[in-house]
Image (cartoon, rainbow, N blue to C red):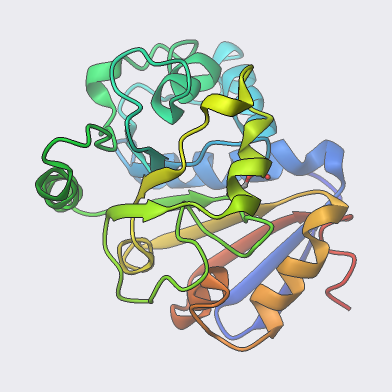
Length: 254
Ligand code: PGA
């Protein structure tokens, strides 16, 4: 378990755990482990990006060491690119499989996949939401924080009631995400994402934030006005947010 952790109550229902960057993956893995100890078949939403990589490495390490049982976990996705069908390399589904699910022995059929085929996408988004309900809802939703305050692909302007849908990505997001892929010119300009409203229905939410570049937006999300202009600020509408921030990301929290 993580040591040297400082947990602070930042606002009603918002608890922040500030850790060294070396402890970031372990602190995030503790959230998953605690959830699975309480409910071995928990429904957990997993994000893509640089932020959760230390989490995935730590979960795989614990699994290998026999410290965590992922065999009954029910993983669901947060977002993906519109058009990322099949084995398209620019796909969050395939990224998650490569970085976490495949090495963890979680077969593709166990993952509730975000729809990405433009053909019939609106219907598929509704089916995606029904699939979450059929699993009893999301127990723990893990999120990264975009430089512009997005959560999933809920870009600025996304209302608190928004559901799973197609969304046009901002320049900030396409530029930030280009680093994940070998050919930046092929990164799609539309995404499919759980809505803010979908995310708010999760029974608990873990917001993972690391690096100095996120310090300003983390402060705005936690202390600024609650507004669709900063979708992450809308998380404060529900009283169950656990923020895990490294010291660099927490440097402007005061
Ligand atoms: P990052 O992306 O983890 O690569 O910084 C986070 C996000 O945009 O949600």
